[in-house]
Image (cartoon, rainbow, N blue to C red; front, side, top):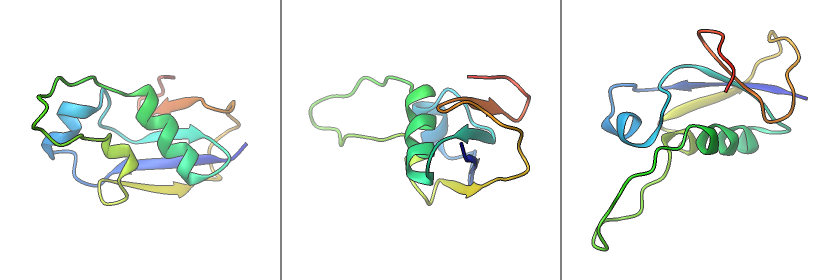
Length: 91
């Protein structure tokens, strides 16, 4: 299984605090970069109440401008769908 490194490009952006439980580098085991973004978004999801007038918002992990995603062959093997944080925790 490939491991992808996802890095927030601007951790100070309010979307990180409002839409994700984690704002740090993540390593995600996935078959491709798109699936790595999906896994990160789903496992760090923060539910947000909104009114019917507000635009639907998506996890910053899904946005290439908000998070850089690249293949990282230096990481040890991980199981499909597993996430490791920069502090070594598993999500």
